[in-house]
Image (tube, rainbow, N blue to C red; front, top):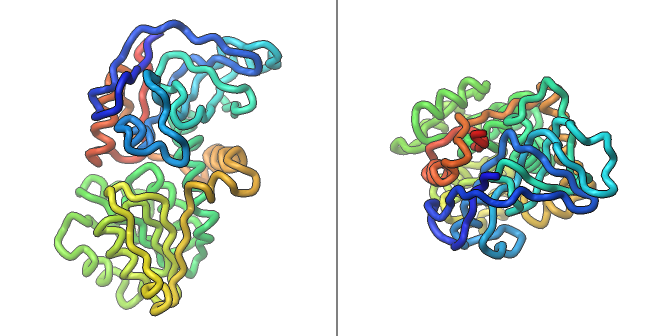
Length: 329
């Protein structure tokens, strides 16, 4: 089979397509003929060797990839024959072989997909979607909220905007570039603001017409995240889930006490140790997809051989929604 291999940590060009032996499922596993593989921001930091998230960095060489969807084509010992030929989606773990034509995973990790569910959408929801659902549990949004979402055109951000609108909150989405701003508007945001412009915060304040954000859902950090935090009204809350800018926001005791703010981290250990575990979030996320409550935005797929370009585009913030690879069989 063809797979993306990485023999050393470093920039995106360390990812190369190679011919490797087809994997065989072990006891309790199945093999999936991959139709779509997800590309996650954490994949890029693992590839660079700077961060494995809550897990240690993998041993090299390795095939990256956390999320796949496709059809089960082989069963390991002890697996119910029901699964053979089923359309499925699964989360493989932090760096577990998803960027390939074939992938193996424990049968207990599978979620069956109906014929109506798009593989790319399912891949978006099994990983990015479950994170968004976890963030939304912590945020507990209501119709009384004014929600500010930095990076609202990203895979997580687009889902947060949709759910905030569904509960009746006022939503302000931030993005870089006119195309992304238009995407946010199309998702129903009350306003979309280009944060690459001068004094974008003044534009947000003008849009709010005297109201103040009550919730900031921030995965960007840096100057944008810090400015968003400082715009929160009295009693507001900030929910953080990363810092794609490379720098986390600074939440001080003084900021919290002087304005009665609350702060929470929605990912990492909190997500891993929540009641029901990650499996429960996956099930909830996929149910929201099937019901039409959440519809992930998926970037134009990259061929498997162009995994390095997918990483570079994601790191360069040149993508919208979920980034995926399609094995070009």
